[in-house]
Image 1 (cartoon, rainbow over the protein chains, first blue to last red):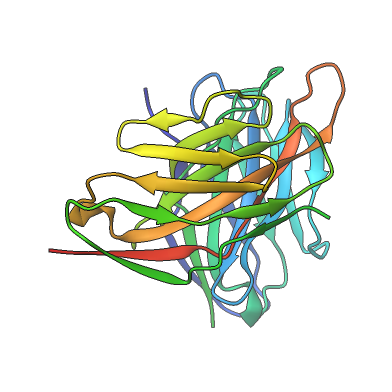
Image 2 (cartoon, rainbow over the protein chains, first blue to last red):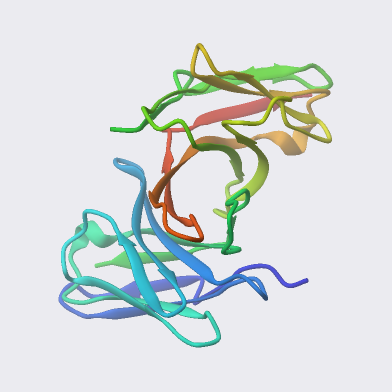
Length: 114
Length: 121
């Protein structure tokens, strides 16, 4: 069974540009969440998608957005990049159901803004 | 607000010995879940173990066990027989349920700051 796949693994962008990251969850998983990891702030929740709907959102500016497709694949977009957006972006997939016992992460996309 | 605290920024352990990584949490929600993840230098977050707040038994997965003390709000990870490959960052996380609708699956993970474990040969 394939794991969570994030593409690309590495990105270098210039301040002011925009970027799109992709996450393919484990087959059968309908929930996809995104997290930002930086040395200073640690791991912070960005948003969660389920059945193509954003169900939950963290405390990030509107420059951060996402979407989920009918096959549960998700993308996140960051517009007008700032130097502080440099981070490891991780996505997690989980089954949707009564219990929420596992959340599996991808390898992450390491974004560097110069 | 829910919070996870890991008080050990770094830990050393001798190969083949057991090690305990501390995690305390704070929540007023009676229903919650606790996770431990391992993050090697490659960056991937590897799921290790899960404990539900209503679980009567401590969770175990191979060499990993979770010492769940609900009254003390602690969920320490115990790694038995440490191996060199166990050297990594370890994160404790708590699931915060934000959607208690029919499927009760809306939620997010709140992470601690992590503990860097180094296994010495």
